[in-house]
Length: 304
Image (cartoon, rainbow, N blue to C red; front, side, top):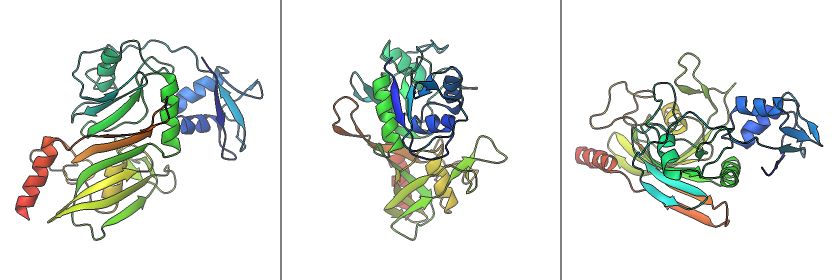
């Protein structure tokens, strides 16, 4: 495999942290494993995981051949919005989990993509699987993009890192926002007592920035547009709850009682814009609001 040359941009950052930050789909444990196996070098010498980087360091990473994973391809219908030899973008429905995990060993987007893509997969995390560089929650619908090879995966990961991969969502939040637009800049970390939740944590959290703007005032609710500058787990849900406007139907960060007709939070990944890994062309994909979202808007407009 072609070596990957990564240039450090921060002083005093551990090598494993630098790798995980630079390649967002590379987990911290996977980065540590690569370092322990000698897959990362600096000046021709292996780099230890606790090595502290200096700006300008050129770390060379040679990924091992990916190992097959114990995930079965499944013929699950996909709403493919765009596909070519490098990338595939799908409109994920509410209820579809992205990755297999405890409680969801199959029936996921990964199972569906393994079936759909066949042998065209990215192995950047040391496993043969579709290169999903960003995630959306089970009960969030809309656009998600996956890389079909390592070249595309690294390009998309780089765009996530430099914020040129544009992700725009639409949501309905509880309450009337007083301003027409704003930015939430609040670091996010795992919740201290509930490991399934995230929370704003100014001491331990990773930087998280969400830009929001009002699309429509709906009585005691607001239809908003959100643009992610970063991509932390549950970011929009955590940030809107943090400023006192949790998403409608979000029983984790808002009211515990479900909203009639909603399976979860009223949140849809509407637009995605990126530089095509192969051509460099700026591509913008869009996914209309699903029927259930439009039904919520219609219901709220009738109340006003």
